Length: 215
Ligand SMILES: Nc1ncnc2c1ncn2[C@@H]1O[C@H](COP(=O)(O)OP(=O)(O)OP(=O)(O)O)[C@@H](O)[C@H]1O
Ligand SMILES: O=C(O)c1ccc[n+]([C@@H]2O[C@H](COP(=O)([O-])O)[C@@H](O)[C@H]2O)c1
Image (tube, rainbow, N blue to C red; front, top):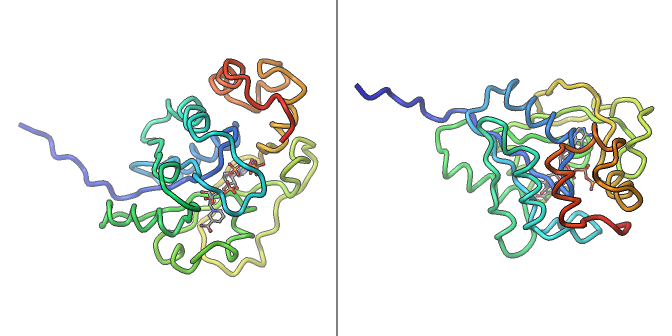
C-alpha cells in the first residue's frame, strides 16, 4: 500500500550574499530547521544586492559554496532563482513566488538581528511582512570588519516594533566581511579559520583562489 505523503506545511527562506557562507550561517540554518520545524528551507544566494556597496563574487562561486556549506543538511534546497533574475533581488518578489508554489504553507523568513534593524529600509517591507513570519537570530553588535573581535554584546531588539519569532543560538562573532579580510592575508586552510568556515567551503575557496585581495 502506498504511504500518504504529508503536505509541505512549513517553508523557510534564508537569503544572503553568502560571500562566503560561514559557520554562523550554517548554525542559523540549523536553528531554523529545528526550531521552526521546517519541511523545507530554501537557501537563497542573492542575485543583485542593491543594498550592498560592493560587487558580490560571481554567483556560480557563491552557489557552489552554499552547496558546500549547507548541502548535507536535511530539507535544505539551494535555490538559484535570485541569481538568475534580471535586476535587483527584492525579497518581496521571491516570497511572492514561494507563496504561489506553496499556497497552503506557513512561510518563514530567516534573518539575523542586523537585518531586522534594517528591515524598514527594504523594498515593499510591508508586503514581506504580509507574506512571511520573520524568524530572527541575535547577532553581536560588532558586525562587518570588527566581527571577529568577539567582545561585543547582543544587538538590542527591544525597541523593534515589528512582529518576529526569535531563534535561539549561541552568539556567533563572525561576518563574511571579516572573513574576506582574513583570507586576503592567510590561506583558506589556515587553522585559525577552522571554526569560522566549514571545511568544504575552505577547500572550495583554496581551489578557486578566491578572496586573495581585500574587498
Ligand atoms: N554572525 C551572525 N549571527 C547571526 N546572523 C548572521 C550572522 N552572520 C550573518 N547572519 C545573517 O545571515 C544572513 C546573510 O548574511 P550575509 O550573507 O550578508 O553575511 P554577513 O556575514 O553579514 O556578510 P557581510 O559581512 O559581507 O555583510 C543575514 O540575515 C544576516 O543577518
Ligand atoms: O528586498 C529588499 O529590499 C532587501 C533589502 C536588504 C536585504 N534583503 C535580503 O535580506 C537577506 C540578507 O541580506 P544580507 O545583506 O545580510 O545578505 C538577503 O536575502 C537579501 O536579499 C532584501
